[in-house]
Image (cartoon, rainbow, N blue to C red; front, side, top):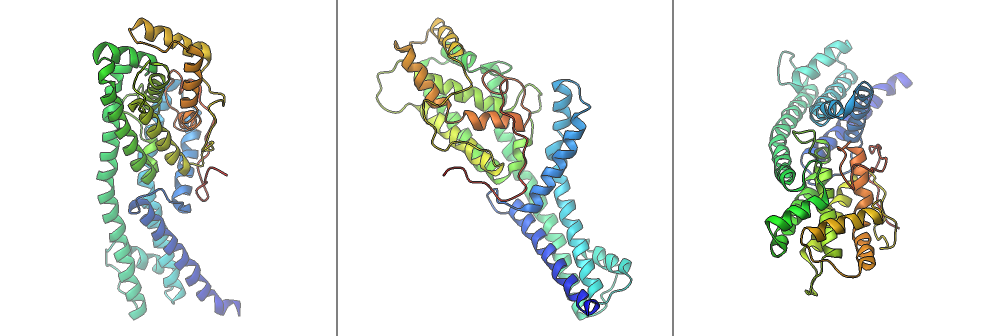
Length: 366
C-alpha cells in the first residue's frame, strides 16, 4: 500500500519544494519589499554562520573587514545556485515518480532540461511537458538574476557617494561634532538646511533600497574606515545637535529635525527585516548611550567654532536625548550586525545583535 502511494507522495513533496523555491526567487529578485521567504533567509543565515567561523581566525579590524567584504557577494551568488539545485532535485524526483529509472537518469533528465542542454530526450508527453516547464524556470531565473545585479549595484553606488563625501566633512571615523565644526566653517549656518535636505533624500533612498534588498546592508565600503552605519550615525547625531542645541528664532520645524525623522524611520524599516527590537514610540526621558559629559563637551567645541547655542543647556540636553532615542537602539544594533568600524557615539558602543531571521518578519509595537 505504502509502495503504491510513494510516487504520489514524492510528486507532492517535490512540487511543493519547487513552488517554494520559485516563490523565494520571485520575492527576492522581483517583489519590491523585504518579504519573509524562508529559503532566502536560511541561505543568508547559513552563509553568515560560515563567515562567523572564519572570523575566529582573524586578527584586527582590517582583517575582519576583508573577510566580511566577501559575505554579501558570496551569499548573493549562492542564492541562485541553491534555487537551481532545489529545482533540479525537485524535478528529478518528479521524473523518478513518473517512472524514469534509475534515479541517475532522472537527475540527468532534470539537469538537461534545467540548463537547456537537450542531451536527454523526453520519454513521453507528460515528461516532455514537465521538461519544457523546467527549462523555462531555469532560463527565467538566470534572466531575473542578470537584470537584478545592475540595479543592486546601482543602489550600492548611490549609497556610497555621500558616505565617501562624508570622510572629508566629518573625519575618519566620522564624528558629529567634527562634522558640524567643519560645516560651520565652510557652509555657515544659513546653508545647513540644504545639507540636511540632501541627507534626508539619502535616508529615503536607503529605506527604499535596503528594505527591498536586505543584502545591501552587508555590502561594505571600499575602504575599511568607511561604513554606511557610522555615516548615518554621524549625520543623525549632528542633526540632533542642531535641532536641540542651536539657537533659532524660526518657530517652524527645522530641516535638521526632518532629517532625524527620515533617518529614524529608514533605520527602523530596514531593521524590521532583521527582527530588531525597538520601541516604536519612545519617551524623550528614556536613557541613551551618549552621556551628559559627552554632550557638554560637544557643546563647548561647537561654541568655540562660532555656533550660537541655546542658553538653557539642561533643556538642550533633554531635547537632544529626545531626538537621539528615536534612532539610537536600531543604529547601535546595525553597528553590531554589520561589524561597523568604531566611531564616536555609534559603533564604539554597539548593542549586541547577531541574529539573522529564520522565520516570519517581526513587527515592533504593541
